[in-house]
Image (cartoon, rainbow, N blue to C red):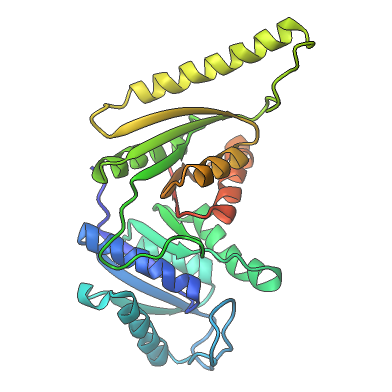
Length: 298
């Protein structure tokens, strides 16, 4: 059974991070987990102007002042009742987040993504993306467009789980099915045929080509069904979908049109062909999803 015992939420005092903190608070409440709220500063010696969507006056740079601001953020998110722990560190953001999560034995990181353009998009977005690539625990990314939640409510009843049969994808399927069971929800398991033209061949196309296309689709459906059949139906309701075309486009389109509450997928990290193919899919989905995305490492 999957149960998060220590949730860590890195924040940069932006509106997007504040929304992620409400999700972290809700999940910590649901699982009765320890919540640690982390801010990484370049240095504690001086005040800095806010970046991204933080707005307002420059935030204080001393450790004590940053801890005080973390506490205010926790209070606004409803985390005070959890006895959440504020933590301020100095150094490189993505490396420290990953190292702190490992040192603190956090089993879930919750982070905001930044849908901004230009310099700030590259700066802030890259921190989350680097953490997704390198963290050893699951990472829940919360986009600015994710539905608002409160510290007492977060239920993922409609979950989309893309699968490419890699070790990380199969591990993600375990998480998706368990989360679906806990919410008494439905998990849609999606397999994409990336190498196939998404357009149906016209009636004048060679019949063998059309037959081969259908054979590939049937094989994909059989493989997907065989994989899902290994999982007990007592988990939750399971839907099987085979899509044609670029995987990340199929994932994002299905999540949007079906109103998914959560996408659960494998994260890259093994190098080689998986890093190039499935890793790039994860990268695109985390950047563009309008619902939270849980990435899982094998």
